[in-house]
Amino acid sequence: MSDLKKKFEAASQSVKKLDEDPGNDVKLQLYALYKQGSEGDVQGKRPGFTDMIGRAKYDAWAKAKGLSKDDAMKKYIDLVNSLGA
Image 1 (cartoon, helix red, strand yellow):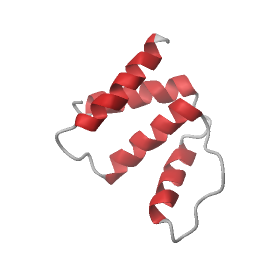
Image 2 (tube, one colour):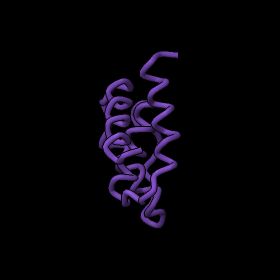
Image 3 (cartoon, one colour):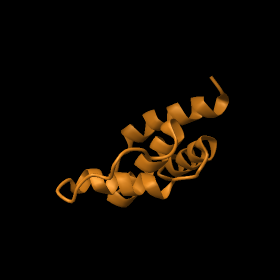
Image 4 (cartoon, one colour):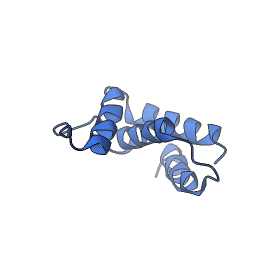
């Protein structure tokens, strides 16, 4: 496992231990960067208007489209570190 991947996994564990809720906007950023870093570009259909949470997650992930997995992992790690995790 690469050093970046190890840091990425460590960041994903430490973010679960945050003392304060970072808010929905930051959570969506974290979600999008995590998905982009682990799976790549968003796939599948956008959820319907009745699934507001799923739609927000899809849209956040879609904004990261084209970002390489390595760059997404780096941004995720930086964001987690900025939250004090």
